[in-house]
Length: 188
Image 1 (cartoon, one colour):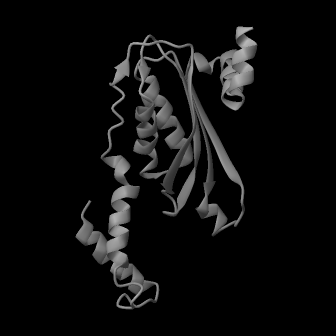
Image 2: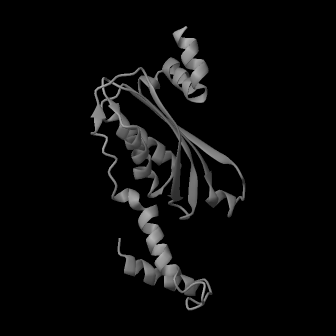
Image 3: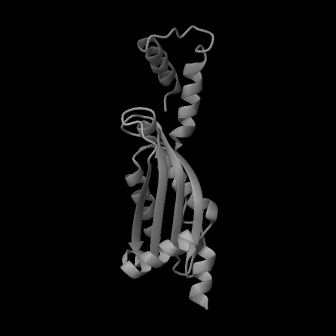
């Protein structure tokens, strides 16, 4: 990412929208935006490193409420929310931080929610697990502050492997929604 070029382009944008880039509150704005963009769009250069696994097994691993922030590729406005992620290991488990990094890898890009959900599921499934479920719930500022100006939230899901079967899909959704009740009910 060329920070100097971003600074110049932001300065030009400030002028084009009718503002004065030399005004006190805007002088450092190009620099602040360039720095913010390094972080916001860091997913292009990140590595989730799912090759780091541990010899353990479990029937299912669920990580709830992974927060994410992304930028809509259509309007370059934020969308943000939480991801519920579940997988059935095949003799090896991932470090939980690696799963959070996987979400960051795809959310820190110009993105659409549906593709992000699919990308996360595909990459996790490609590492030899039996099944993957990814459910994303998000609010989109492109919808809230412009256009239809509506407070609707958006949900998307992707299921791979064993979770593509109807019964398994229903079971994993129940586990994600209500873990203690479902785990206790199944094991009784």
